[in-house]
Image (cartoon, rainbow, N blue to C red; front, side, top):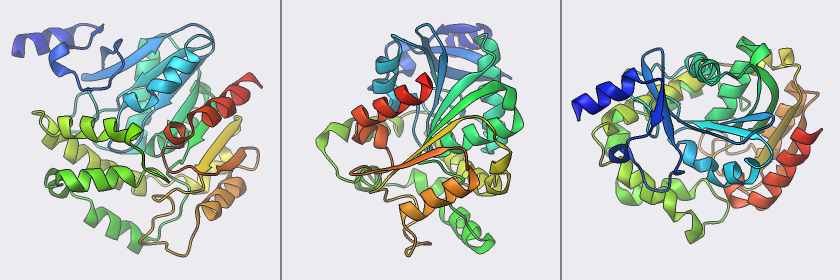
Amino acid sequence: MAFLISLLLLMSATSASAQDALPHYPDDVQTTTVDGREIAFVDRGEGAPLLFVHGLGSNLSLWREALDAFDDSHRVLALDLPGYGLSGKADVPGTMSFFAEVVTGVLDERGLDAVTVVGVSMGGQVGLTLALEAPERVRRLALVSPAGIEPFSPKEAAALKQATTAEGILNTTDEQVRQNTALNFAEWIDRYAWIIEQRLALSERDDFAAYAKANARSVAGMLESDVRDRLGEIDVPALVLFGAGDRLIPNPYLHPDMTTTDVADRAREALPEATVRVVEKAGHLLMLERPEGFRQELHAFVAE
């Protein structure tokens, strides 16, 4: 196994090892190396490129349906950020700038100059950071339930960081995994059970402890990489979608009196040229809960 891993790291782009597989992944996952880190990705189709970026705790498989829906008309690229999925997980700083730099490295490796970034939750904040720090790489932004819009005071940010620890993630019970997964949806149905199965499989991997550390550092990274005051600098077309039944944005414990519509209004104020919509009967992962509506919105946006 050590020899196989070393061989994979030396190759610029290879098929992902079957021994590294997680359930419910696309069949065409490859790996590449960016700044010494192994990155798992999918790259298929032809046409204008779409880059899909997942959120906290998840991986590129969240975009399986979207990849299948757009690969006949676009070049679609999805990656596992460092610390997540099948990518390397050691010593992940978790800052949004770090993740944006990794995204840039993947684009360079794949020969892509500028892309439409489609990001969900933390992936949305990564997209916003990329648009601010490397605007020449971003043609458009399509953000689903993006982090980085909801405000947190220094006291609230400190409380969130203190509450999110690697130890806590490592000690999460199977029942807590089920409960936490259900919070991503306005209404739970068994069609989403694959996410629970995948997360439980991840906890059996040798790199699960590193995954837990990456998650904790990513929460700190989102809170410390505040982009709200700079959003007015973004001048690319943007589509921002929130689920009316989002149970994670706004934070239900720190902001019980705030609604998702309030966060959407803040997005309109910060990104005056953006199209901002609140999707009814949808939660945090609205591209899974309302896939047809999401596809229609994204198709119309990229066709403009």
